[in-house]
Length: 404
Image (cartoon, rainbow, N blue to C red; front, side, top):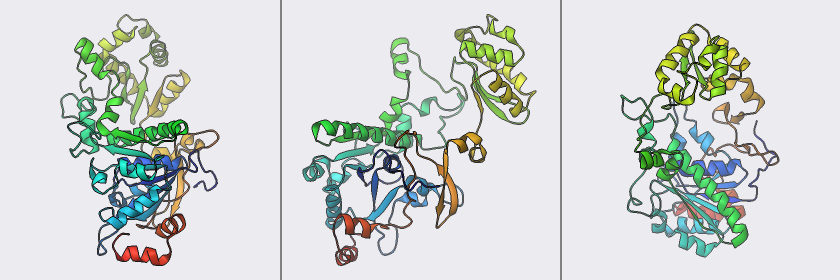
């Protein structure tokens, strides 16, 4: 269930989230999970139509539940950033904030009078996280950029998928999530730096650079040896055995590419002689005979069930595991023991589980303390009233003017 007592490591840190869709809000989710107070600013409906973060309607299947995850631990206020009255509200919030997150096209918040210079004039200690496709500078900075474009430019798409097919994508928005994660990491580093300097700063997190950061040695390999990584499907070229193998009743992943681990796999297979066979005895040799070795292993796994292979892998200490879906996660004893999933009770959806806060801190762990806001501007009275000192009449006047 939700943790209503633990405040988290970032208790006392206030975040203003201006972003929409995935990258900005996921950064806010991470900070909120760690205990920060996150005030999400959403556009109000106009003539009863539109308004709110589009994520409220995103998801898969009949029930759209993505919002429930990405907006947890947040308060929703409404403000029309396109008119002066709405912009003024954000400026007032900034006076009380530690971090501001935005993921609009570069130049947008400057157009609204909310650029870094203007915000730092109000609050010099403010840390401004800016997530964009190409970053805030450079010849491409003004281009529109979504996560998939960053994945392509950063090198991810070129090496994902089968070699005889077009580049594949992951089933999740990995580019956006990486950029958001780096934005969060930058904000935490900037908070630490502020302890020394007393000043805030801008965290510039570009989608393509976040992807580039996890591309391992792709660029050096090309520069030094001319090697161009290719799409290799379910394997990493030259790293064997490490693949998904068909059993009699399903698929199973085995990673036994280190020499000692491979020897243990051979013993589990009842083929200990393979570990000293010159064709497979070394990492280089196994990589050169990758397809041959995979076929040999799968000929064995096909004679056993997933459960039987798993029992042998555990017995012989070989890294391996099932291919999990949501149903597997919900029923797994390890997920349960570590509270990897946590149940919430929504007035709209009833009880359901979602991923917990990670990583786990021993003394001040993150947690889910509140549900995603169910309506746009749900916390207007609390935030504008209690934090900014506005009375009901002032808030009503803003609403009549289309500012909230």
